Length: 116
Image (cartoon, rainbow, N blue to C red; front, side, top):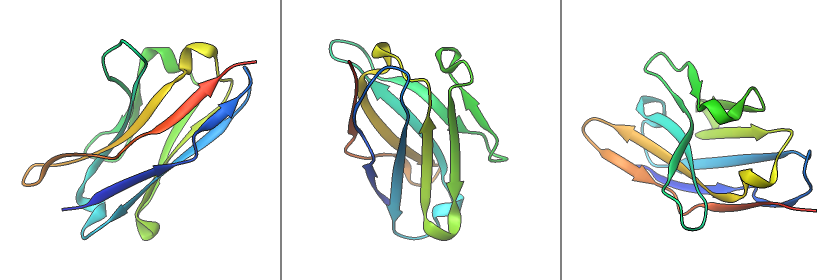
């Protein structure tokens, strides 16, 4: 089973950019379906982006073309490039890995704060 560690969060001004990384340790990273979720205070965790079984990313409506999810199987890493950030993007961002025989695995999260 993989373990996930996110990084790249921080404080950024509105309109700024961040790139989140999620590094997976363990075997067979390429066999996992990966996703990014976020959770703002007092709100439920919600999908930001995830890959489908052919590795094509799909995005939540609120992304509106601002975020790009990608993965590098050679580095066991999945990325979330976030541009044109808004204050409402403030949340803890989580990486998720799914495989039928391993279930759902979450990282510990990385805080993103968008504020002037």
